[in-house]
Amino acid sequence: MARSILNILVVVLAVAGGFYQLYLKPLLTTFGYARVIESIGNTNCKNVPELQACEKIMIHQPTGLLYLACSTPISRTFWTPAVGRLNATGASRDDFVATYDPKSSSITRLKVVGYDSPRGLSLHGMDVVPSSNPNQLFVYLVNHRAPLDGIAEKVGADSSIEVFTTTVGGNTLTHVKTVEDPVIITPNDVVGSADGKSFFFTNDHGEKTGLSRELDMLGRASTSIGYCHLDHGCKFAIRGMHGNNGIVQAPNGTLYVGNALHGGLTILEPQADNSLVLADFIKTDRGMDNLSIDSNGQIWAAAFPNALLLVFKHFSDPSIPAPSSALRFSINTGKDAFYGEKYKVEKVFEDDGSVASGITSVAYDAERKRLFMHGLTAPSLVICEL
Ligand SMILES: *[C@@H]1O[C@H](CO)[C@@H](O)[C@H](O)[C@H]1NC(C)=O
Ligand SMILES: *[C@@H]1O[C@H](CO)[C@@H](O)[C@H](O)[C@H]1NC(C)=O
Ligand SMILES: CC(=O)N[C@H]1CO[C@H](CO)[C@@H](O)[C@@H]1O
Image (tube, rainbow, N blue to C red):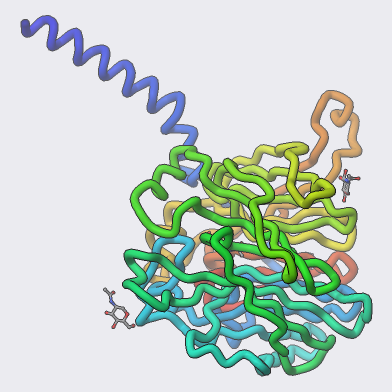
């Protein structure tokens, strides 16, 4: 009897050990367990503390002007549906889009016109797209509204995607339309079209609330990308993906999506019916999200050197510094391209959190060689000359 219990115990331990070595250890490593943080690109930087908790940065390349979707770090600790923070009482209802001009260091908080929902704006992902008139821009915003009925902890956020328009360097944001649809479940980030009529967006979970969401950490593929047209409604463009977070589109239409949980960049090609087909996948050693593309076509990603600290400590108390990094993806033109290394992944920035804390969004101005970084609960905008 004792003998067989011992045997079972040995088998259980062996399986658990195998599970740890094969599965849990690489997973914990990806999440940042025992990672040594380097110092890269963090010596020539400055902070702009007037801009806080800005989740997304877009660069208007012709002028070098930055567009940021901002909030307050404290309200994020109560209301961030993406990470299950659903205390609607503590949500900020007056999040805002700001512009920042690096030449003059001037900040403009854009005044909202034509949008007067009492549920206000609780911002997250954003896209800013020049229209056919280069002086007019379309601004697409993920808005995590509090639910009209029910308790937010139970039913989740009633998220919408808002389309606004503005002029380059202007100080107003004029509302065009609120898009709400059952396909918009847990929107995270958005890429919009130049005519102000359609967009792709990521759902960062398959459900708004519930325990099953947590299984995504272990590889459950419940996330998706949706497509909406303002005149024809929304549909899923692709489902069954893992860890979807930031999304960005190249000028030729190719889409790139970051995996926030296990890392990696997925490349997708849109079809004539606006569904998406997987084209490629580039592995990374860490989870990442909020992507951007620079004017040279290189993809930039905010990546988490230590996701565990970011999610479990910094998101609860933004004054605890969280290490940050930025990765750059480009087509490999070197010799090893021949042997299958199609893409080059470079770590261009890494910091222990003293210069750049809690970074979840990066954007690079390739003409002016400047890296801009911000984050969901970050205390300031960080600008580094590279
Ligand atoms: C929810 O937010 C409100 C307002 O900030 C705060 O007073 C309250 O303690 C929070 N509730 C919980 C359960 O954290
Ligand atoms: C689109 O452009 C990217 C580079 O920016 C390239 O890697 C990709 O292959 C292009 N896609 C198509 C369908 O041509
Ligand atoms: C717009 C966007 O991609 N937001 C993500 C940026 O990073 C934070 C931190 O993981 C995510 O929670 C956001 O969903």
